[in-house]
Length: 188
Image (cartoon, rainbow, N blue to C red; front, top):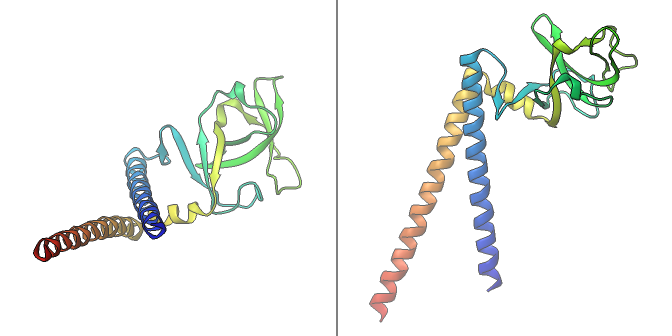
């Protein structure tokens, strides 16, 4: 009895992992394709994804992580929030807000957690991309690879292999079940 429960639990866990990986691969493929067509950063459900390329936000956000950013109204930003903003020359920067200024229009003083000093220039509200909602450690490395031609092919091959493996497992299980039923009928 315990063996059956353990076997069923393992089977459910395996199916859940397969489904989760398949969905993740499809979402990743869709968001990458969407970003190529639109020419922007990949996004899912309105959240933009940026690969963290430097250690300026370490240890909160490590190099190689994906920062998941939600576009928000600049007025909602508070001291302590981690924001992503236009860093100039087609790059973005992700740093923590240290001061919100409202003297000559809304702007933010920022600093990377690992940096000793604040950034030299304030970030105007117009340069705000959004607020970092969470980060996914090390996923940026996979994301970078997935943006290459070899990465896309790897995702397609892996997704196909997962689907075929699950299909083969289902066919084998059904054949065994059928075989047991036929053996049971001949023994009766």
